[in-house]
Image (cartoon, rainbow, N blue to C red; front, side):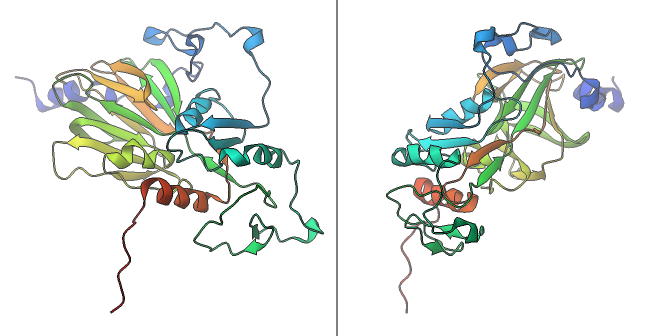
Length: 336
């Protein structure tokens, strides 16, 4: 009969011993389509480069005309530093697209520094003052966004630095198989298996918990209003440096969504005695099967996604919560 130590080693396997990212190959690129950037099976690297005609110069500005999915696609095209991105609403929901199409052209000019506010002497303006579209100063504490008909640029462009997650798939020997950057979330679920997903989660090499659920979500603050929110996770302001961990239908009552600081390294490991494999997806794409002994390492990426604000990050974010999700909307109580 195996001892308790042997049982623990059989359960956790490689996961307790080889957790350091410094021991993994560092030459593999962050993967994004097309296939020439993907790592091959069992740590084989692809050295093929794209044709020269496909290599573009670094742009000064990215403009997306669509929904939130287009912003996530643009993020995959820049696994390293990403230029400022102007998100124009052209989809159905548009939580991350604060600019309407009517303002697109003028917003592009303003983002490139080609327009200035209509003022007699712009040098005398207070850079902390927010201007409305009639060129009248408004209080930053104004709770309701002004109704805007034409675009007037602000005295300065405001950016939201949206955190991304650097995700690595490791095999049982600790060889790096693939690497992805995600803007919203990493989801590990049971896929088509009839069994619960069985996972061991670690935070900075310390055992966090054993997951027995349909799956688990590792989310950025930007992704806190996506799948994580639907699974019962907290809504987090995009400027908060944090990583959210939210279970999907856990088979216990005590497993709740957790928030960790952005400097931690999270790792999810498929134990050797798990009933079945699991599936991992990165921003809903690049679904891959994780065999027993495989693990996913998740940490903050050093390259965020800078998005241009229409007003400021709090006004844009709260405006999207209220307009898209009817946040905390109900009839006001009548006075006594």
